[in-house]
Image (cartoon, rainbow, N blue to C red; front, side):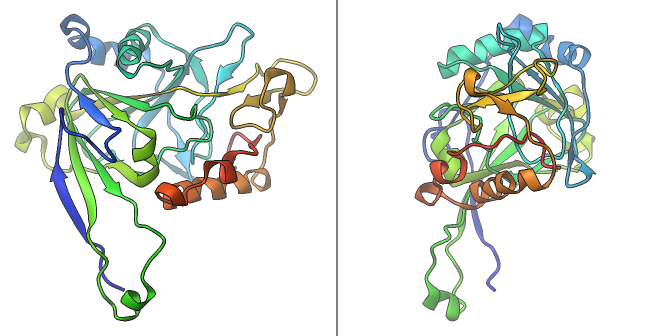
Length: 303
């Protein structure tokens, strides 16, 4: 098999990123908030660990969101064994959300907050899972603290030339874009880019003393806030004899009145697990949201 090839360019603010529906904005927050936001978040956020495939992911995490008047709250499902419980938006997160919404132009009711403690913390290539993300909306990532590089890497099309493979011809290089994410920046991941490109934050294990001032800011720690507009909701656990229920875009019951009890167990999660894998693998028109997610799933955790 021919080795993988990449063709990488470094891009930033003012460039069309991914398929062209993604972009980077600098200086999101006003100076007075940007100067204190990192340290306030470290104090306010209830940091926790998250597990995937039995192991602890290499970063600390927290989940916050907007509670509805009836007590229901948004849920974002992705490949994790268990995620921390969703808590109400903390004061500084709420302020940041207001600025992010003003840029993206639609509501953001859920945020996954991650603390990259050193350059050894990372997240590997993936597409964000969109079963619960309101269709057509963008995903918004705010960076505070040390500058890290996000890499966008175009997915490999599953359609290939069999004769070329038989002749062991190398596939064309996979385009990749390196996007430095400095303190107080906002990256907008458009839905088409998420479908056709993978994204990651690779490790950067260089000694802190060898890094630039932007990369060594806050002793190399970075806080990432990924805001989403979520269309799937959980009811309070105490509601009704049937226990917690799920409804909305990514569930089988699409309205509050049609809410169904949450399913549990590995067997119940098999279909959603397969759909997650397909979303990572399939690119552009190959990915059919309705086929893989349209019927909905009522499971929350993958184990």
